[in-house]
Length: 288
Image (cartoon, rainbow, N blue to C red):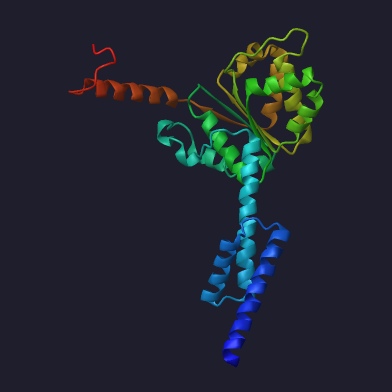
């Protein structure tokens, strides 16, 4: 009887400990340690006969990992990245002139720590945006503050600051980012605004501010020749000044190859025609 009573007392004490443990977890806000997960950790410790140190390391490691994942997810959402491109999904064989080692070196993110800029040029559809979005995703995972914007959207954002008197605040916020990606210079029509600075002035102020900080990197893709920036941005002299700033620290990558999007469009059309030519292929809705 004494033996049974001792086992019952131990069981009751253990249940009380679990209750207190769960209260501690809730009080500390240890996300990811619900009853089921906590029981899993305790069962693991019993089955492995783990030490107290091993169990504590496992539990805290699990919580820390979840917090890291949430921080990364938050940075990705705040960055403006919609599509989560990866270098693993890049079609390297389609751009044989592109030096893969150079891109993989950039993906190690050392250029951010060295505050070096990137300038990618080439025709639309050659993979410039894919590469920079993949680098941005890695930068978010590494803990850097990142923002991705198309050039036309970035300029609209800055012009909106002139309208509601938040321009300086918006400019400072962009200036503090570890990595700012300005995609598709030359793609999309810029609005011509009377009695306001040109797009060239707006972009110059931002680039100049980020260069003054000397601890951040700016990555830009251009679908037009650099000599055409003046016409596109509305001021050749200021556009030249922007390029002069970039020339001081920018790593240049030119992708001289065909458009992958056009390739995919041709492939879709080829498959469509092949299906249409097959015996027994369905006719159109009109039946003709």
